[in-house]
Length: 69
Image (cartoon, one colour):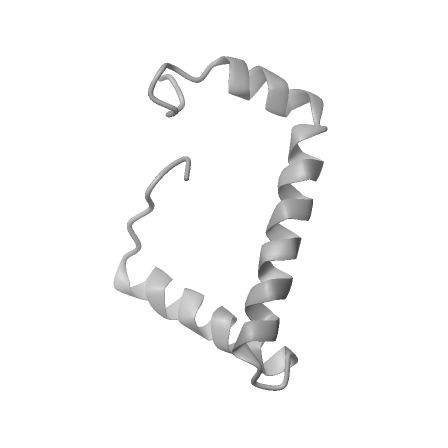
C-alpha cells in the first residue's frame, strides 16, 4: 500500500454510499463485487503505469515510498 488516507465523516458517508451502489450493481453479491473491484484496480494500475506523467511522478518519490515535497 502506497499511503494511508484518513477520511472525514462526509467522505466516509460518500464512500459508503458508493460501496452500497457497487454491491447493488452485483445484485447484493459482496464477493462478486469485491472480485470485480480487485480486477478493476489492477487494470487501472496497469493503465496508469503506461501514462508518461506516471513515470515522472514515480521518479520523484523519496526512499520511503511517499511523494517528495
